[in-house]
Image (cartoon, rainbow, N blue to C red):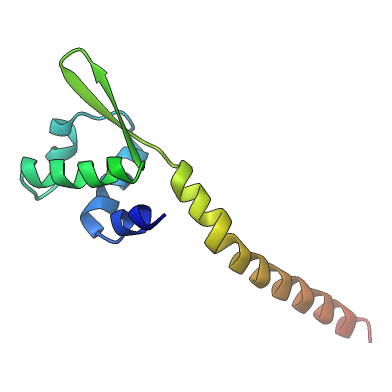
Length: 105
């Protein structure tokens, strides 16, 4: 999980993931098109994203297509974020019940 957090810590890598979310299965050239980075910098970021299993590369002839793998982000949500969301939802539900009770008094 440390590799995932490290990969997500960089705004350029998050931007790459956002691009893949919008249009999955892009080549390196396509990914570089909208970024103000050199091809080598994008390649280095993609390697870190691959190592964190956030990007999967599939060869299609001479091209390498990059795909977003959202599973690790889902695991982060399940382990770290969902439990906090649950607490807020409970609080809102309790507030709603309290307001409804007060309305009938």
